[in-house]
Structures are given as structure tokens and as C-alpha cells.
Amino acid sequence: MKKKPISKKQLVADVLFGIFVIIVLGLVFYLFTLDSKPTKPINKAKNKPSITQTITPSPTVKPIITPQALETMPPEYQILNIYRLGNNAKSLNRNELLEQSAQQRAYHLAIGKDQWSHEGYVDKILAFYRPTGQAGVGENLARNYTSFIEVLEAWKNSETHNKVMLKPFCEVGIGHYDNYWVAHFGIDTNNNCND
Image (cartoon, rainbow, N blue to C red; front, side, top):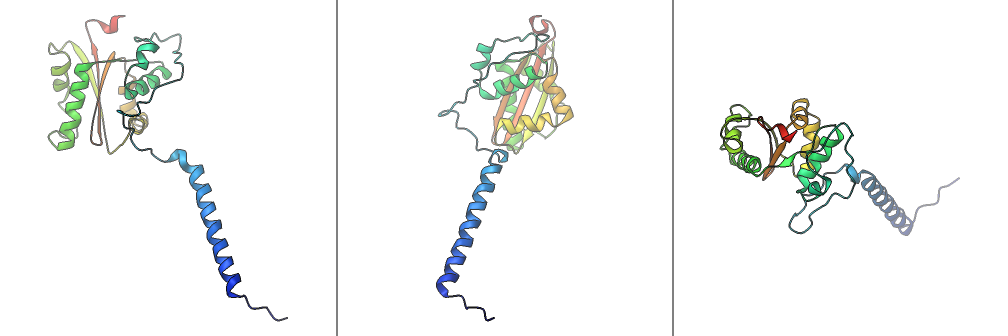
């Protein structure tokens, strides 16, 4: 039996059909993997996200801020506090002094003024937070992340950073400059979170 030769029309139709199938398969693959791709940072001035879920802390953990107060916090603080509450740790109050300290630290790391190390930085945090030194502080650093959700995931997957996030601190300040993120945690040893 002799094979019938393929016409140019049929060849073009077969090639176009093959391209169509590849595009459809690529689109399906993209849609199924969409959730695992990092998102672009949100322009906070235009689209400030809000938390719509109800936060129900464990009965064994007394939050130090109300859900209403939590909803008025910036998204980074909301995300961190929801993570803490889900791990039986108290929610943290936003502290302006710790935020200034964290913001300055993020900026100094980005421009190369500070070393990428926690070494010796406790005194600098205390200078902002409680100049009298009657406090406990902690610090988490991250770089090369575009969103706080990515940062939180990285900190959760690091044993030492996760421990700092879940320690019994009362307050937190989060700073961000370029792709550098800093969280400074604090507790005034005299008032112990008003317990």
C-alpha cells in the first residue's frame, strides 16, 4: 500500500493545531500553579488589604489587643499576630519606638551601613525602646523578599527566627526598606505586658 502524500494545507493545519494544543496545555499548567508563584508587592496607598476572618484565640491565651484593634493595624502586624494567636502566643501591640528602630535598621542594612548580623545590636534596639535598659528585646532580619508574607514564611521555616516570633514579647515594630525586612520585638520587664 502506498501512503498518500500530505498536502501543504494539511501540514499547515497540523502545525497550527499542535501550537494550539501546546498553548492550551501551558495555560492549564499556569493556572494550576498560580497559587505557588510569588505575588507582586501591594501598593498600600491604593489597595490596603484587610483581614476579614474572625480571629478566635485559644481560651488558654489572653490576647493583649482586641480583634478590633488588630484590624486597624497595618497588614504586616495583622499577619504576624494571626500567626502568633494560631500558635498560642499573645498578640503584640505595635510600638512606634520599635518601629522606628526596625525601619532605621532596614535602611542601614540596605545601604551597607550595618553588618548582616544580630551581634551587638541589642544595645541599639534598647536605646530606641527603653533607654533605661529595663526591657527584653529580639530581632529578626530578612532580605531579598518582596512581601511580608514571604518573609513570615521564611521566618517560620527557620527554628531560631520562629522562636523569636513566638517568644512572650508584648510589642513589635516592623521596618522595611527596599528588599530588607526587620522586626524588633520588646517587653518591658517592669510591667510584663500588663498581666
